[in-house]
Length: 506
Picture 1 (cartoon, rainbow, N blue to C red):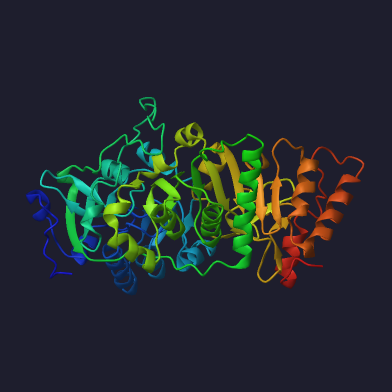
Picture 2 (cartoon, rainbow, N blue to C red; picture 1 turned 120 degrees about the vertical axis):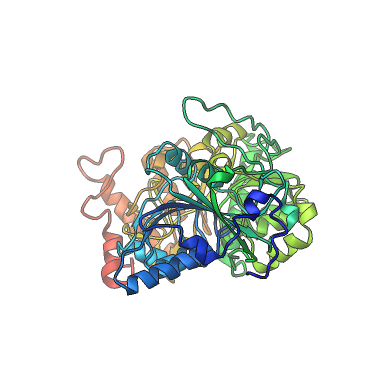
């Protein structure tokens, strides 16, 4: 990248600190706490982490210790989480991951991991709960003449990292379009008790500035890059995903007919990532919705398509996460999209205050739910971390409606997504309102545990309904069945059976 002219670095103080990625990485010592930019693979620094990994390998080969503690916005690129994990360069990681190698290190305890709600990490770091933040490594797309930083395709926790880190390394990415300037709304919340209400009363409202700021004296390196985001490739929508999407639309139509949702303008939407989320958005399009607004974490392909078609009028998020095809479409029509998209720090995109005020309809995926509505989003078979809770808790607990989505089975039917009792609880029954599978939706609102169980069994896969009903009936027949009947000796027997035999079926 040495041949790239630093045309986007327009401030002399920053120009004078341009160096190679290798030189920048050598500034980060063993055991440093490092805050990286990046949210779902977007806006991540991608060359300095590779050099950190190379340095770790070299030092390990000499018998020397070298690891860092890594924080981010959410999951990151293969050239951040992936290369650092392969080099055994991370002793601690938070708050969310999707990289396979990092996941393996976490589940073998090579890397200690703290799973956190995405809205809370910045405040806790700012408060000093993690100790001193030694370095921030942040991707931007340019530096203005007066020293302001132009954010990239995500903001995440970047401004807080810039504020509290002792030293800062900037990666200036020339690949991202300059027209991104102006799409961001950067604000920080500050420390209690001096926080003020967030004056966001409409998805379109802006409360900050398009730029990030940093004390130039803290900047120790500027690295010029030209790197693409990690782009997620989703398989085409299958019949199961489409059915889930159609069932969500059916539920929304039910709510409109009952007067519980406005017919003239649907409340703001939040949806997770992946094929099921894209299927829900596609279902809304087929149902004829127009001029929707979204207050969410991530803008992915389905949402970009709805913006282009006028189904969605405005989308607020923390990140762009697009396939190669959608990324090319965004770049080609960036002037249009910047009028319909605002990117915010995740403290604000995931703010419980704003989510509750706007009345967001929260739609998130899950691994499993039990018959009473407890949801496991994170730990396969109760012990193996998948990715993390992400922002689902921020939206589920505070949304006007809290909807969880899942295919009814996994592993070719060997695992039921509806079980007697979840093997790990991320969202309690108190925070779940509606569970949706391809077999329908279970509306759990205003229902007792026993009434919830009856609804949940209906949306389980037919292969498991009789087993669930048998468990529930026998639990209820106990002399002291109680308000939430369980057979304690059998509550996790399905998971135990899978671990021993490879299937939950008897």
